[in-house]
Length: 102
Image 1 (tube, one colour):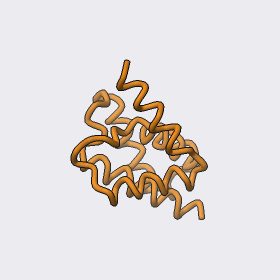
Image 2 (cartoon, helix red, strand yellow):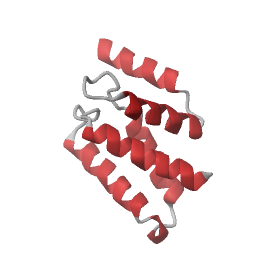
Image 3 (cartoon, rainbow, N blue to C red):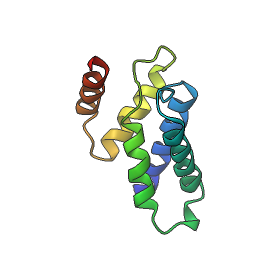
Image 4 (cartoon, rainbow, N blue to C red):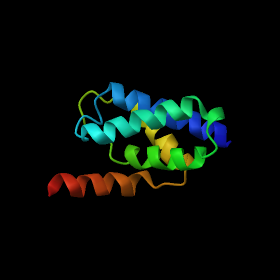
């Protein structure tokens, strides 16, 4: 199950990256996010896969799900990822809305 969750995480992150859901992040965060994706793609080389997953999941929580280019499929993947890691997608969305309002 954990491998499936990791695969979902990588896939959803890649989809949302392509759909510009992370364009608002700093270049530094985007660079770190891409490093996480690369490491998870080669996860047999890393002992700290859980740590890398956690870091990438934190970046995913910062996705702008309201960007016009986000597809229903990408959003469905994102919700599946949040669920598979025990995260409440609605509370994450609420946090993002609060940040937008500020």
